[in-house]
Image 1 (cartoon, helix red, strand yellow):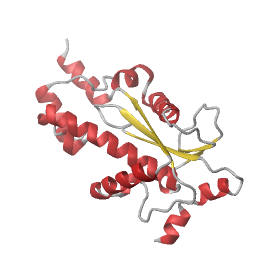
Image 2: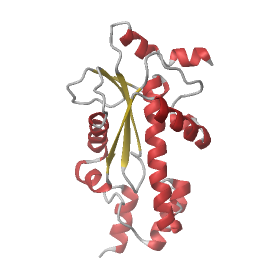
Image 3: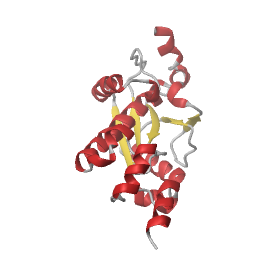
Length: 209
């Protein structure tokens, strides 16, 4: 397990060897769902931080994500969250909305990073940064950000599920499952759906004349 953590720290270690110590990892969750915001997180971990088992949040069980969320929230030097809602996603498209959310997360850090490691996305920011393809599986800082973003968004969907249980957001998290689309066709749309997404456009074309 130690080797896996060490491998996940290679980008950070390279920066540390250059004298850079405040390193933020940035990741997003929620580009694919039909409803709800895209959520991003920026996380600055302590120097030479280790957390056995931490990796890309998609590879973790919900129980492990919740456990790591609590540990990271306690241990991190700083955490920033960025949330961009469906209206803005429809206005600027999900790619641009994700970049806005990432910039917001970085801006919401209460400690300014010296370098930012970003999962895949290129960002126009003044802070030195590195975009890493599949970074959430290659950088501990990005993996930490992926867990914070994922748990934050999932909890938002659980709250929405309490208000609108018929859509089963607790299970589908807003993603376009067959059941979710069936429920949209049965119950219609609530505020927060992304009107430019294919299944929602199809619903609107069929039901609004």
